[in-house]
Image (cartoon, rainbow, N blue to C red):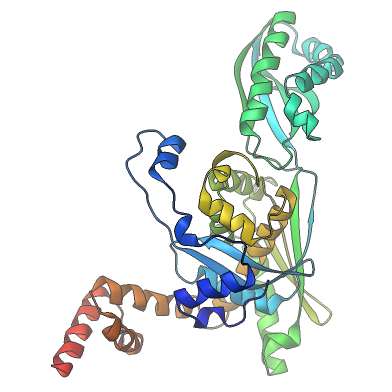
Length: 412
């Protein structure tokens, strides 16, 4: 689905546009979380904390047009994602087969080398037993994939690979780990310390790549080349300095987390895995690279994205279901590709702003709108106050209050 000029519309007009393009979608106002559902989702439920839900436009991913649901409170993120997507064009994605990794950590006595050799000889038997413990996932074409053992310091660790299909899979893999470890304890002189999944999946990576013609970066070719060179240089610098790499990746996660939130996914698990991957080479690195190749600026992002489209929170949260329907009800792999593309477009928009006019220009317009609301401007007063705030030497709640008082005095 393509939505042209979406940002120019009022909220009511945007919802009408969505209804016209996707008539099967329910109205968002009927997708509110009920108290009964909220009480079932968490303990000690008392109410709801709302986040704005918006839509990023202009995305073309693997040749298909998408509009992307994003739940986030930070201004400029959705605008940047939409602008970045428009400028980078078609984003090509690939995904490795998804595999969760679970761990059974054992305390032991005796010869570790002999124990590990014995255990690794039993991996086929243990894998068969693991599959018996996960019949429903195996029936869907997933479930346990491999078992192996390693020594980690004073511990022996059993690892379990697990294909969760389109689910998050945390409960499924933990059930297998807790069922498998007593068998191992019974046959060997070992005691399980813990049995738990890991949120680190360095062998299940999603990649998104785009090729931006340099001439498209500015109407003047010389300025376009300068822009491309500066973006590539900023990308290079992030590889040298973890202070910059951290902020670079935070900007990427602005977009990624917003889609994860909108679709009911566990953004904390993804964040943990992504930042672990950014450090896997021994120093914290940016998730993206931008290089100049012939007449193009080439961008690439590679990261682990453990996402789901069935089960868990997203199966009971009506707005998450609405968001997935907006995306065409993708499977987990397709959703991971979409999210990687959002991260790449977000990064392009941020770098383009940082190396040119600066990041604040885009933020200040929305900041002015928030200040106008904070000081109590009415609908009739708001636009005039926002315009004056943008022209003011500084922008703060105090300045907004003073300007609003002047506006009201002039009208009276």
